[in-house]
Image (cartoon, rainbow, N blue to C red; front, side, top):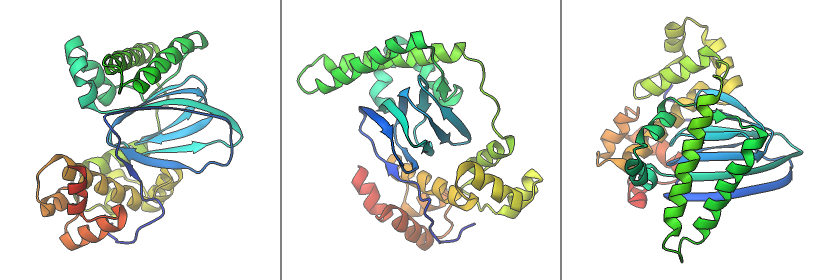
Amino acid sequence: MDRTTMSNYDVPYDRTPPFSISYTHDREIGKKPVIHHYHNAFELDFFVKADLEIFVRDNNYTIRDGDFFFINEYEIHRIHYQPNRPYARYVINFSKEFIQGILREAGLEPTLDWLIHQGPRKVETKLEQRSALTSLFKTVVSAHELNDCDPLAEAKVKLNLLQLLIRFKELADQQQPSPAFNPHIRGLIRFIDEHYAKPITLEQLQAEFGLSKYYISHLFKETTHFTVFEYVLNRRILEAKKLLEQTELSIIDVALGSGFNNLQHFYRIFQRHVKQTPLQYRRGVR
């Protein structure tokens, strides 16, 4: 599964600032393309109006009006829009460093850890709960717009973001567990996420899971819209970017640590995928 052919499913990587917020409102979505990407920050979404599907890591979620959604940093996600539907949502991206100080002071670091490692990605809200959430998001938008000229604005952004995270946790605690996703897909993705640094073949997955490799290929593509090879390759590129950003490892150690057993092969795939050499990429993010 170390072929060099690149596909149309290379997943774009968005580097985000420590904090950003946006509001999108389309009276009616036309034929919008599938959005797929990942980024170096957490994402907190509130869907005021929506009718769409989001695939995140190993699960597929149906999104409707009032859904509150959390995406972990570096999680590949794909959004499938339904055409001719009203659409409005708030999107916050934030880094752990941006919020860590206030979380520590409030004794709420376990809340973010819970969201990252245990919490559900989606929580549903009742009609009477949505106006308060909308007000919180509007307050964050207003404070963020004043950030350059008001010394209290960043503190207000962080305090309201903290309230949103607390509210997400409270709503998640009240919610019934979501129906289990296809256990085969969940197991396959977990296996790839844990073994991407080693060679992975369909034959190996067939032996590991006791499923036909043809069934694995069909199920994986039908559910995730990636082939197994595409997912493995994107997972390796994602890890290489993280190592280039966050460590001082040599390029060859980055290659080996992210699953590329040949340096020349790593350079060729990385440059074709990222449009930069690994060294250029590292210099650009430092």
